[in-house]
Length: 470
Ligand SMILES: *[C@@H]1O[C@H](CO)[C@@H](O)[C@H](O)[C@H]1NC(C)=O
Ligand SMILES: *[C@@H]1O[C@H](CO)[C@@H](O)[C@H](O)[C@H]1NC(C)=O
Ligand SMILES: *[C@@H]1O[C@H](CO)[C@@H](O)[C@H](O)[C@H]1NC(C)=O
Ligand SMILES: *[C@@H]1O[C@H](CO)[C@@H](O)[C@H](O)[C@H]1NC(C)=O
Image: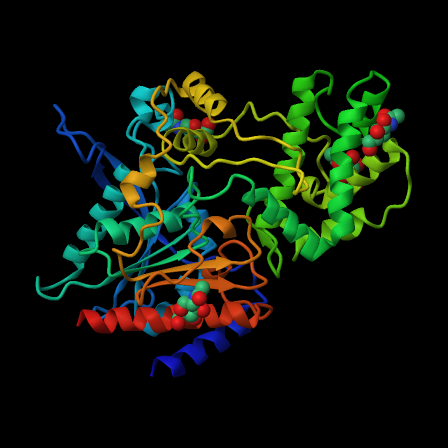
């Protein structure tokens, strides 16, 4: 029965695929949740958490599919999670997208939420999970007519949100029957994953989609920039990059290199088989687009190389053609970045380094320096690199059940994800030729067979979870 419906849904999606800008219909709700789930307070201490609902496909026999918000605005994440909309009709599911505290509109102290540790200290994975559990419990209770048949909850999440969705199943199994965790870097913690794997994987993505020559030319770019930065005459080449501010000091050069490297990371993360707008509007396979442009170059002088490199980047930096100059200063860091930096300074410690083996500027991992920066930035004196491992078990997942970890093999984090089947109910599904979170995006006619098979596996497994509940 499910299979027939599935076929229909996919045919329907295929017909609609040409309208790639389709926006999913979502209603906005707010729910008051405790600011601190783990300690009493003197006064009522709650704030409004945002969640989005789509009940188009729901009937009272159906489950609740709850999307666990990660870093950023929940509305954007919901619009990029078309798989849940694609399969909701098969299960008559209610779709709920819950925002993570301190992101989007779910700010406990409004715009003041980031002023100091006094406000920020309620931003932790444990508090966020308790919010998600609180909402799950609330929905189960309010949607059931009788206590003995509450709707089943299946959790979904991607990237950091995928880690949370998995942890939610691990910590609150009585509330959540199973989890689909897409591209969740579960092992991106000290001692669990080597610090060089992230940038090595990205280099592999560039070699695969853009060719070795592209990798070599990107490396050459860093050398040219660093060599040129040493003299006043040399620094003239930087005008070719159309940066808004002057590049003079070594600090400016460092900023420039970070800005460029970030663009290369984002291109790899958004290297989808069709145009998307995740970080910025991008064509299909941006890595290939960039590399094709870059490797069409044959000149030798540093100046013309940088000019050419800059032109090759323009489809990313100057998509509209209206940008006067490139702003590389991150001083106007948005609230999402502040919240995320705080999390990476307290719990989500992910060692990163680049070496000779990758295409990035060589940079060692220095934990002491990292902890000092966090202290200077947020006044955090107890960065606990082992905190999340203690809380969530690190690589010891065999005690848990009902989680699918799906990972694109061509995504930057693939070496920090669960890469082996753990048990007969904790799966690792590897998706060849796919990048970050592709399986949770909506069906697209250009998706490869592996993505299609992964989605079928999700549907099959969710069906089993639901059947076992009743
Ligand atoms: C918070 O800041 C945003 C962005 O600067 C602004 O649009 C919004 O009006 C502010 N909200 C309040 C309550 O001050
Ligand atoms: C050009 O760049 C190379 C590195 O690729 C460097 O060795 C050389 O000194 C640079 N030339 C000038 C004139 O800056
Ligand atoms: C963006 O494109 C326009 C039109 O081609 C060009 O005039 C402008 O210099 C470009 N800006 C940057 C920052 O590349
Ligand atoms: C895990 O098990 C599933 C189902 O049997 C299988 O499709 C998948 O390839 C396995 N994953 C790995 C990494 O071996």
